[in-house]
Length: 256
Image (cartoon, rainbow, N blue to C red; front, side):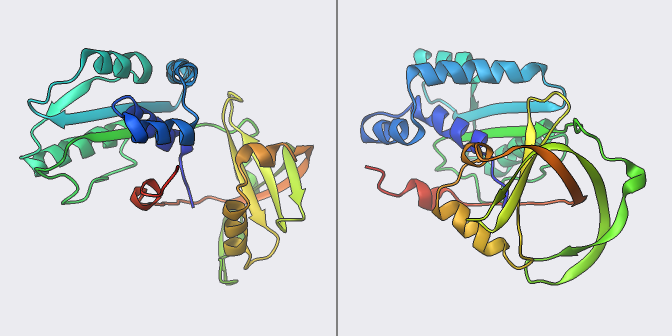
């Protein structure tokens, strides 16, 4: 499972600027939004501009002819650094193709055809997107000569031999007996970002670990508070991973 809390938080924060009543109250309480947090978000988004290998774009389109309040447009520009643009949603395939190309450009071609046919229609009232791309170098780089074929165990306990990188270095790590797992935080070169990996001790323990992390409301912050610098011996395969989820059922819950 791969998720971007930054993308979800940013997109819902953009929606909050146009919300009112119960919807606004639920968004503010769920996201813990305040004028101060929106100001902090503005500074955070601006700070990303000088990070090498990091691109982020906030995008919004509304039907052609819709009148946008000046205050809303100003907030979208000042906080999220984007303009509210018009689109002729009656030409749904053309609009969908344009949005997909825009997302593809921001992600350097890594995400193609994000919106499937039918995702945009004449009844579309607004289209919002947060797009994040990051390509970083490790602070502690792997030595290519240490890459060897090693067994990788799938969630079903089966194994396949894959090229596996290896190094031993000082990292922030932790052993979690309550999760029957261990974790390591691997920083990228500028030390502003890092990869937090949590690995079950059992080859067939990934489903149980994921359920426990979600059920017990573990967050990266909570995990990191229980980790400290230690010598860690890491073997890690090179991998590609994709994940998709429909947020509609979650957003339909009663958050009162």
